Length: 227
Length: 227
Image (spheres, each protein chain N blue to C red):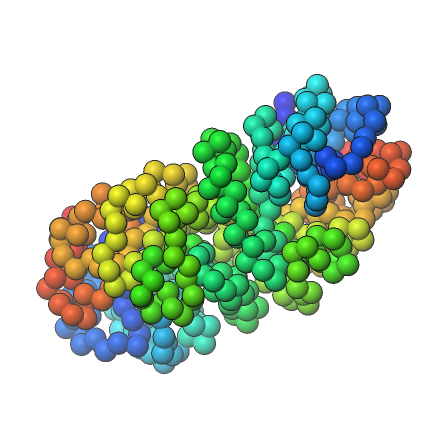
C-alpha cells in the first residue's frame, strides 16, 4: 500500500541533479520511509527526473514529484507537490510560475493529485532563499504566514524549510499549534536519529535530504529512530 | 437557519461607505437572499461596518464580512471572507496584506470561519483593478489561475470579479468546468433577473451589489428570478 501524502511521517528527498549509486538508492527505497520526493533547486532536467523515477518504481514506495521545473514535469508519479514560496519577495515564486506551469501542463495533470505546498523559507543563506528572494521573518510573522496558508488559503501542506541548517523546534511547535487542517512538513538539517525524533514530535512529516549524499548510514538512522 | 458560504446561491453585497435607507435595507435583508456580504473597496471604517452589522443583525440572514480593511475587522459576523487578488501585480494584494491582517487580528479571529477568496479581477477599468494593479489575462490564463486557486492552493472560493460590467458567461462556464472543490463566485453587472439567472447557470453563487443603490426593484428582481 503506497501511503498518501497526508499519512507520511518520514520522507526522503532525492535530487535528480545528484548522482546516487544503485546500492544506496535501494537502501533508501527499502528503508521503511513513507515516501520519496524527487525534487531539487536547480539543473533539474526531464531526463534525470525520468531516470530517477524509473529506478525508484522498482520498489513498493510512494514517489512524488516536486514540480519546480516545468520542463521536468512528467507523468508516472503518485503525487505532484506544487510549491509556492509564500515569503518570496517576488510574485514569480508565489504564484506566477505555478500559473504558467498549469497553463502548459495543466491538461496533462488534470486528473493527478496536485498538492499545493506553502513553503516558508527560513534559512536566508540557503540557495532557495536567494533564488526566491525570501524575506527574513520574525517568529510571529512565520505563524501568520502559516495561518494564512492553512486557515485562509486552506493549502494541504505548510512546509517549514530550513534547507541546510537545523531549525528551531519551538517555532515548529508553535506553527503546529495554529494549524487547523494542513499537514506540517519540516525540512532542514536532519542528519541523525535524535534530530529526526525531535522534529517529528512537532511536525507531521519530516523530510530528509542532504545527508543521503553525505552519510548514508546516518540517513538510514533517521528512519529507524522514528519507527 | 443561516446558510454557510458553500450553500449560498444568491448574495447581496452592501458597502459600508454607501448610505442605505432603512426601508431598502429591510427589503434586501428579507428578500430571500442567502446571505449579505459587507464589503467595499475604500473608505471602509470600523464605525460604518459596525453600524451596518447592527442594522442587519435584526434579520434572520447570514452576514459575512469581507475583510479588506484591517481597521474595520470586528467580531459579530457569521463568516469572514478573506480576499486575495491572485492576478494582482503586487505581492501586497496577493499575500502581504493578508499576513499583516492575521498578525494583527489573527488571535481575535482564531476561532472564526475564515474563508479565503481567490479573486480574479477581470475588468481593467474597475477601481479594484487599478488599486491592485490587476494584470489583464487571456482566457486560458484565467482558467490556469482558477485551477491554481482550486486544485493546488485548494481555496474554498474562486471569485470572478467583473466589478461594474457584465462578464462573459462562456468564460464563467469554462472556469466552472475545471473546478474540483472550490465554490465559484461571480460578481459584476447583475442588474436584472435575466442576468442573474444566466450567470447562475454557470457560477455557484452570484453577488449582486451596485444595483442595490441604483434601482432597488431591479435588485430585488435578481432574487425572485433565481428562486
